[in-house]
Image 1 (tube, rainbow, N blue to C red):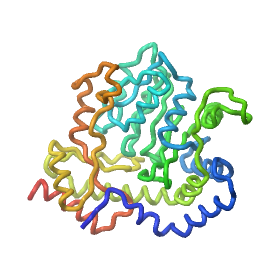
Image 2: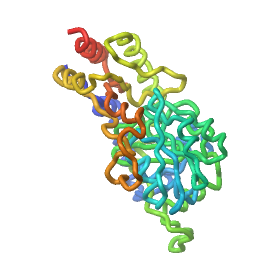
Image 3: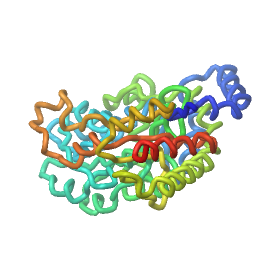
Image 4: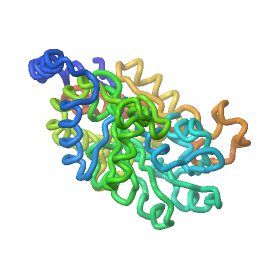
Length: 357
C-alpha cells in the first residue's frame, strides 16, 4: 500500500467542476492581477481568521518580507527568531539588511520564549516566532515585552486565535499547506489599519497612484487565478482541519508508548499541518516506512543558525542544542485530511512494526 504525505488529487477531485468554473470566470474577466477576485478572497479570509484585514500577496515568503518591511526594519536592526523552521523565516530578515538572531526551541518545536527574551538588545526591533506544524507558540509572552511580534503562520491557517497578540501574522498558500493554491500565494493578517495600508502600498512597488512611488516596495501581488482557487477551497478548510485533528488523535492513541517515540501534544486550536514524531532512530524509521510505502519527511534537516549563508553570524554546533536535536530526531508522517481508514491503519502498523518487528 502507498500512503503519500499529501494527496492533492483526492482533495481536488470533488472540487474539480467548481475549480474549473472559477478559473473560467477569471479568464473571461480579463483581470489577472489583484482586482475584485483578490479583494473578495481577502474579505473571506479575514472573516475566517477573525482578522480585521487580510492583505493577499504572491507567496508565504513575500508575506514575511512585506511584514518585516512594513515595520521599517532594516540595516542595524535585529529580529529574534527560531533556529528550527523553513529558511524563509530568517531570510526575510537578512534580505532587508537586518540581523536574524536565533533562539532555541522548546519541546513543542516552537521558539522558546524565555530564551528569545534573553537575547533582546537595544537593536532588537521585533520577534518572529513560527506556529510550527500548526501549533502556536507563546506569542503573548513575547508581545508583553513591548516589542512587535510577526507570527509566521504559514503552517497554521485555521489555528485558533492565529495572530492574536501579534502585530501581524503571515500565511502561505503553497500547494502543500492546509489551504493550498495551484501555485504560490500568501497573505498577511493584521488588526492594524495603518499596517494593512502600508502592506498594500509595499506589495505594488510602493506606488499610489500608479507611477508615483512613495517607498521602495516589491512586486508582491497575488494572481486573481490563485485567489479564485483559494475562494473555492476556503469554505472547506474547517472540515479539512477537523479531519486532520481526528487523524492526529488516532495516531496519538495508537502510538502511545511505542518504542522511544515522543508524540506531539494535542493542544486546543492546533491546525495539525504536520504530525511530527521524535525518535533517536529517525533515519532508520524513515527507511522502514519507505519500504512499506509510507511517505515521510524530515522537517528540518539542518537548523537555521548553522546554514552556510549565516556563517558570518558566528554560530557553531552546540549553540542551540534543542533545535539541533530536533533536526536529528523529527519525522513527519501523513496526517492530511484525505487519508482513508486503510491508509491510516497501515501507517500505524508500519510505525509499530519498526519498534516491535
